[in-house]
Length: 79
Image (tube, rainbow, N blue to C red; front, side, top):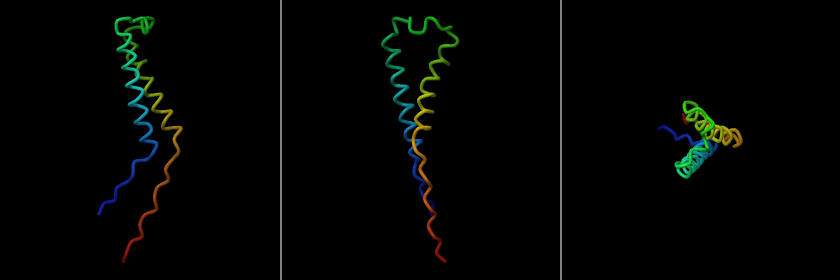
């Protein structure tokens, strides 16, 4: 019988951080959609890559900051 491996807290926190930061970026962009001065200083070809760095950085920071979950000891085999 296969045992389920629990999701490590680092993964859960990084996933939540990616979701929240992406949602925040989309909310900000929706707010300033008619006023493009937020990214007007940046070349058009560069702005998607710069925007992608924000959730990536937040996700990295959440994964780095969260404590490591030690693995469980395997169950003793009968026999």
